[in-house]
Amino acid sequence: MTERHGDADGHERRRTTGGPGEPPPDAGPDALRRAWDELVATARRTVADGLVVGTSGNVSVRVGDTVLVTPTGVPYDRLAPDDIVGVGLDGGQVLGTLRPTSELPMHLAVYRATPARAIVHTHAPHATAVSLLVPELPLVHYMAAAMGGPVRVAPYAAYGTPELAENTLRALTGRTACLLRNHGTLAHGASLDQAYDRTAQLEWMCRVWLLASSVPGLTPALLSPEQLTEAGERLRGYGQQT
Image (cartoon, rainbow, N blue to C red):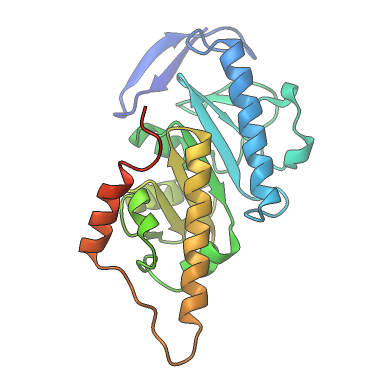
């Protein structure tokens, strides 16, 4: 069959796919299976690490023009290999029978507008608390540089709406993570591991700020923009170079 799919620049193009439940030709079954297994493991990790409760939050990964995403309302510990859910960049379902997460518009908006290959969305408690208090997370730690700079808070909008997707994109301008007011977090990366690491770092920084700002009579010391820029330059050479 032929389907319409949007490119990152918003233009549509046509491509041919298999029948219902069959992977598109640019995403082979082995690659999709490996990506789904990694997605499920990442989703379960968000629960184990206390970043989501129940079926809140969602995870996705892009394989070619197919976006694998957690289904709506299904506990992550119940997901099996046959529960794979995949959509095209236009939102049309191309894999599986379970319905995708209700936050699909937000995920697809990020994939269309950024180089993201994976997204982790959580309801992390400390990050959500910070989203109620400030328009951006104060510069309490240099790891903000790993997310492109001060982490902004996207204005509140009802979950699953185009408005929330638009607010999220604005907050992500020049960033790889943001807070969602009265809601949670979203981080993206080149892989599920990177998106998850940014999520965990963001939650940790929010916790640090809440702890420091709760001490009576004292004001947390913050980094300057110049110090953050220096940290960002140093972080680019961090780790094992290949």
